[in-house]
Length: 538
Image 1: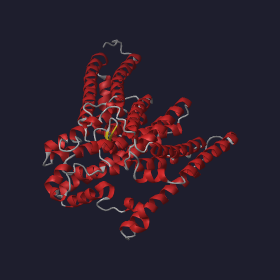
Image 2: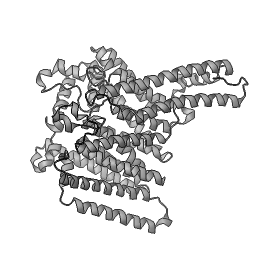
Image 3: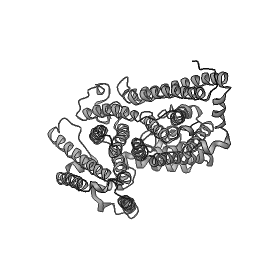
Image 4: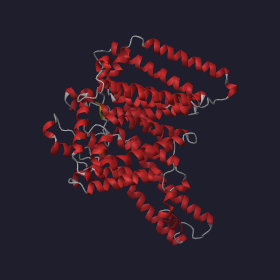
């Protein structure tokens, strides 16, 4: 790689742009690989799917970081020879502590703090090896979490964001959804079920694995498709995102996992805070709700017509599908959508803005909904009035059997935490060491071995302490907030924003695995890359 020796300003700019383009190309290649191949990667059915995806992910990230490091080193040498280290000096000057406030955002600082806590937690752990590799859990040890953080900085700081990566993500997502939908019909087109016990056929699906993890992945896909559909002005992309959203609705319902309720509630609950600012957004939100109702009705028809061939629904989705008035509700939603369309067309001369009144009104509805849920939980659990809620009580009463025994493991986790030494309450026993703690502390009381708390936030609380959880939540919250604020400038990043919102809402009842978490971190990094200005990057 040669550059002219003439030290003109144009030559220096060409050098910087060439170096940036090369690094950007390397990062783009690996993002494409992770978006397109990673979700579909498998080897021996579901038997080794966690290991295969974990190995594929860390292999891609390590190779990407190594190539970028080698290329950067060569570029620094060339810069030193041809430009007397001008660009290198500029690079390292931005790393000086006095420039940190200009270089690093709250999101960057919080993730650095999070990583430092992970390192300290690992080195002070009684289970250093297991904490580093996560081999006694789900491979989410310091090694994997370090790769998450390193890839975040690499992508958010050195990659020029492109919206086409979200199209690639949706393409691979549609394949995952299609396979999951065929599994709902017990077609098993990949013949994965031939290698697992028959009693597990209905709880493992697509190229993801367990239905809870599958639903978490579909939450990411649905968040991107639905939110992007709500704001895009490109007619082709409106159709594309709408089709992806419809398929996503079918897939997440047919996934038959309760964590889908939280993801959908987050999607439908928070989208109006953006969409209700315009008449187009209101119209598309109504179309979204009407479409969802139609999908539920279609699945109800499918379950009746093919009762002997499909897995079937349970829990809340079953209640919705069997609701006698569902057809009338769906028709009412479509009538409302058509009426709003007619009203919009008759008022085109008044512009597309709808003002902030509806946004504030919806925010009030959300607040009242949260208060109502809090009251129901209090009434059912503290006041002892669970019987008055009938079948809904299974969701309101937080006893040991709640959430397929999640209530039990959450209670035992908090009891276990109360016995921790102060240092472990602050920093935990090391990432992904929860399974070891249950064996050494409460294994005799537990009906089975739990490697995870089945709540990502509680998991971080137990394994990295209060400090680790706080840093992680600040990181997520600040990232979502920053992406949210840039939606009007770069509408496509709303997909990243709502993918994060949907995923991290269902994470309250789910686990972090190197099957879905890499995609969450990747979408977060892409969103942050879209927020960062080129001149602010290291």
